[in-house]
Length: 194
Image (tube, rainbow, N blue to C red; front, side):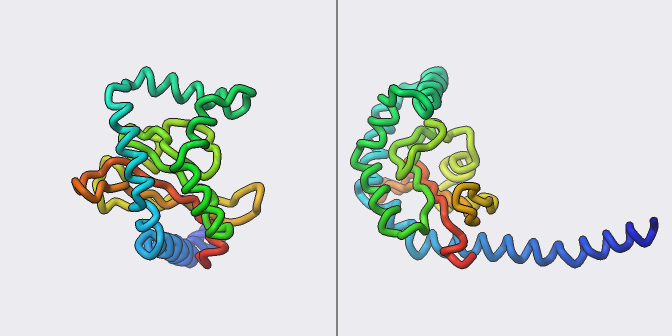
């Protein structure tokens, strides 16, 4: 029994550095992508204007209203009536994000723009929920500050059988230099080489 425990400990000691190295490689590749491509996408006036307008429109929206909007969205995902989803997908920002995603040739699995409350402003594909404010993609970016970058875990996409991860960071108003929202990119790591 001691040999089995010792062998397990040795295997763990040998594998942990490799897992850590792979994780660091994945994080570094996504952070490099943020600086080389993704920030420019987030700084487009279409993104800034849409987030600023939704922040102004939703200034008085409280948590009860957010919960109700999220409940409506979730029911629309599988339902026939898609009023709220349709409004978001039909806006100029969602059109821009879909175009960016399509032009990337499969590198981006999804793009989501969130406002100052964590609500969807625009997206390249339908998300499962409307409120992202209770998820790491928003909580580890928007309230942290302009320089925050959050890289999520690597996951296998069941439908495509490709490795993917999400990278999220704040959207900053270029005029005021204030954080006004957040953006998330789902990235196909097989295409990235990560």
